[in-house]
Each structure stands twice: as C-alpha cells, then as structure tokens.
Image (cartoon, rainbow, N blue to C red; front, side, top):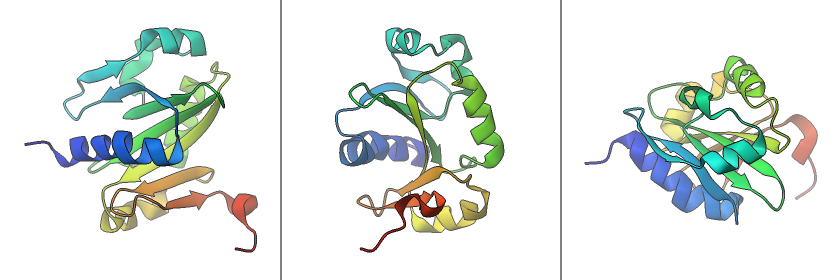
Length: 147
C-alpha cells in the first residue's frame, strides 16, 4: 500500500503539475525510502545543477522549459516545509541554475498544513492536495489586487 508521502507525490505529479505548471516535465522524484524514482541527468546538466547533490534535493522537481521555471517541491507528511533555513539551502544548491525558481510546499490536507504554517518561508507557495485548485502565496504584495 502506498505511503501518505507517495500518495502526495502522485498528487503533485497528477494534479499540481497540470494545473499550476502546465507543460512542465517531471525531472526528479524521490520516494520516502530515499530511492530515486526519476532523475533526468541530462536536464540537470543543461540547467547547471550538480546531480551528485541529489540527496539534498526537494522531493519533486518540475521544469517548464518554455518559461524557464524550476518548481522545487517539498512533499510534507512527516518532515518540514520549505522553511527559511531550507530556502537558503536550496538557493545555494541551485545557485548556478539560471531558471527561475519557484518554491512550493505541498500537503495532503489542511490539517497538516496548519501544523507547519508558521515554519513556511516567505516567497514560497503552498499547495494542498485536498483543495487542488487553490494555492496559498507567502509573497507579500505580489498578488495584492482587487478580485
């Protein structure tokens, strides 16, 4: 039976990706047993990302080659979100990558999100699988406008 973590990773690939990163390619996914399931080495080489550091990567990485956006996604079921400390670590790890980086923390449900909400870094996004058509933006006034 798939773990909660694996279920969330499937939801990221099947729901988040097509909805919020249409056309993006899954270039990395790691399961809870730290077994790499997808690692597109050619894509990482082209982006200037050291494959040798894959043990430090977030759980899921999508790349949109048209917009040159890299989605760095942490799937949170037991371990923490993209916190300020983790954001700095990822900035260093992906520092030579020229693509625009989008930091996303994904949760299966709102209850889990609430446990970690105070740990999420500014300039990050939150996606909750049980409400797949919505995002929470920790971005200050970037999206402040009349609806």
